[in-house]
Image (cartoon, rainbow, N blue to C red):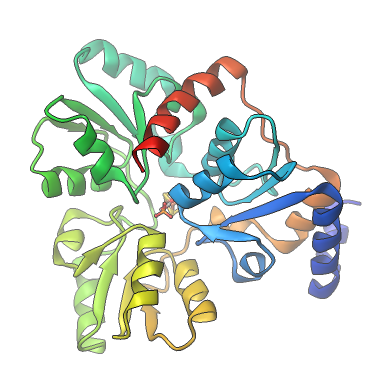
Length: 310
Ligand code: 13P
Ligand code: SF4
């Protein structure tokens, strides 16, 4: 069956097909917090990059279907090489991850041989393979702290790097010049509007937002950090991140008062994962994620160091 034929099916039939194929294949569906609401609803595990990496490493399913962008599916394959890893849309890339290549990193290593290379998981498998350690937005502070006084090259998100640098007072960090198109356009004016429209609300932003935004917010957190905060608190909360997370919180925690800061903060890459593509993926193994073994093994070292830190 071609994708067009799946798109002509009703959602109920797509959901039935997804459930049947999942059971037949002993598959698990991992899904990032930014993916479409209808795909989130049929997924087994929702989370942030760190949580989903951990779940991929620990699963005993034969097949992992990753509803998210390619670097996340690659991370699952790196950590669970014996499993089949599928992604419903191979064109679901992350422009932030695409802004650093393996050659760029090797060049920096030649220029600064005494620096530790810390890569955000939003990087390709090749970049991870030439990095010393990875981090996510959920553990970046702990990972950078773990290298002590050593100088660091931090890539590729300059805002996440600037936030870590400021929080830890660590001056010897070289920051890559990369940014996320969803978060870097959240500005101080968005926080000001959110505060004036929602007096008393707690403002939580993602560390990929610009430095003046992370400084003005009440809390800075990964997407799962935001979810956990909302689960524990009852005051109104406004989230400065991609809108999919707010949809998830409103669906799962309907008693909470959680809204998004900017309705145009949409990751169109994540939204490429749709129910018809998920059904096709499970029924026809489209698309399988593969990584050359030497690259995978080298990248695993950098990710494992992060996973072991917690
Ligand atoms: P989290 O790990 O916080 O979910 O963030 C992933 C991401 O891509 C943010 O843009
Ligand atoms: Fe990449 Fe930004 Fe989308 Fe996250 S929100 S996947 S960093 S483009």
